[in-house]
Length: 107
Image (cartoon, rainbow, N blue to C red; front, side, top):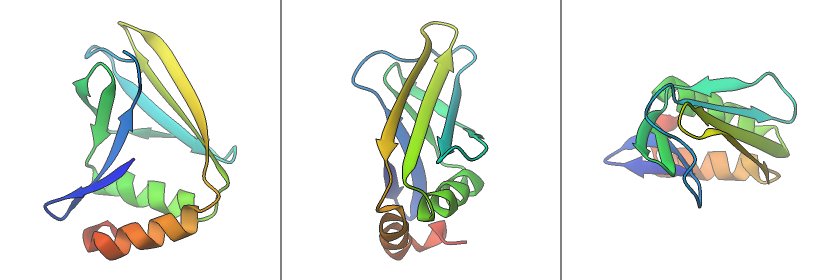
């Protein structure tokens, strides 16, 4: 999920179950089988992680514009790893709307 709070863009990864602990948290994603990227994610709680790193947000939006699928994985010492895959077919429209609503996300 993307969020813009007080003009600052964020990537939020939220699970419907406990997926991560604070120790050795790693959040990664990959669009359409392209090389994966790691996020400078912080632990919010066991089911939510976030990255407010502008470089991460801009790379995510750039990748989303030209992709049809996104794969997300979170790894932590406490819970191992969890993964999910989502359709991203409207990625270009979503990225453009997000940058319009949160101009600081634009590259």
